[in-house]
Length: 300
Image 1 (cartoon, rainbow, N blue to C red):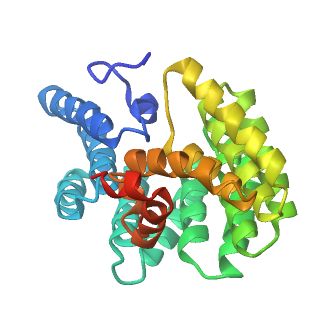
Image 2 (cartoon, rainbow, N blue to C red):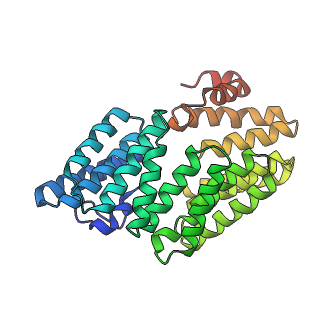
């Protein structure tokens, strides 16, 4: 990591994030919080606290996140509009992830309006993208399109970096609506955007998503080939991904090759059993255990 929490400036605070490892991100933001308190940097302290809360929320420690946001709010000054936008965003995310109230909708709307007034385009895109998550169709689609329009037209690089993530989210909305061809177009856009700015790992996620849609379309052999290519790349990097194993199993199962699929499902169970993102979908893990047979049943 090029940035250090011991010296990162306020403008580069987002560069400390590792969304694949929220616990490590929490540690980094704790360092920034301590430093800001020692140096008396109130603005840095307030914004770092909002990001610390986000890391806690991603670990489903919602009470801790709420207390941290209360501390951030106590330290905000009225003229710090950016800090107030961040506070609203993270209040909304805690509400959404914990299933509270309106899932954070009022906070996201307020964040959008304040960010637009402050010309903080990246934060405005973030707010619109969250409204695309919490709203019901067709409002969700309208918010996603609004976010994409701003991300693509903004002169601010931080806003432009949102294009890949927005395309990814919109792709899943299309997939869920049964439009896999439209989803594939959006995932291809996400892949190209992420490759263009060097986020190769994210581009692999988009490739996985394209293959997943091809499986839905019944194109099992191309989907299987792409998942195998992803597995080979991850092996070469010394990395692994339970979702790749899950899809390998699903493709083989769809091709009538259940015996070949079973060890892939077993490996998926091993890797995904502790994945917090599956906490709200216990049936998925149980299905994987069932398909893995005895091997999957012995995993924690």
